Image (tube, rainbow, N blue to C red; front, top):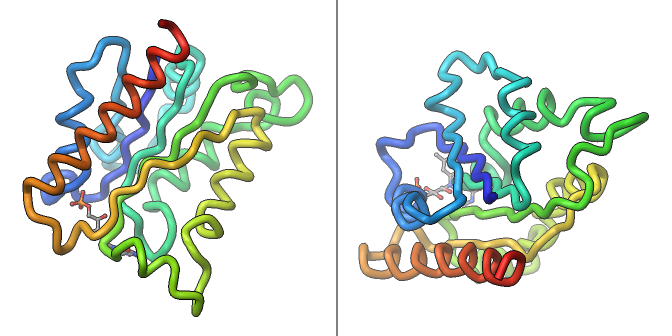
Length: 176
Ligand SMILES: Cc1cc2nc3c(=O)[nH]c(=O)nc-3n(C[C@H](O)[C@H](O)[C@H](O)COP(=O)(O)O)c2cc1C
């Protein structure tokens, strides 16, 4: 099962993430948990989230990039759900052997993350990658949709279809 942990602070204003969600919503064995819908008060149900994670083989963290990082509710989700004795530490093996894919949209173009005057995309991914590896998750190549400020609808749709294909490819490689 693929579990998408979707964290968009303003889902009704989304262009890029909305199209990605539309593309994968109907796939078999895909569950989407939209954190800002589930927890508008930031009161995360840790047991429900851990239950969902236990059922998953691939976990996707999907969100718009905000200040080179993740939205606050996803940070809180990581802090609370990946708990000691469950995700790490003594007896904390619940996520071992599962895979994690970071699926992020950015306003900046790909070259914006490659200009050398500030950390590039691979560096920005490192806290999430380190978190994943610490919890025994396999880190997959991220899916990134860049340039979302200037993309026309056709380009966004095409990229969203690539996201769908990434998930289908993973399903076929792992269950096919
Ligand atoms: C508070 C805030 C911070 C943002 N920070 C960044 C950033 O650091 N880098 C970037 O490329 N885009 C940044 N953006 C742009 C969003 O990533 C972009 O609007 C989003 O990925 C588009 O996806 P959507 O259409 O699903 O909202 C930021 C947007 C907001 C609202």
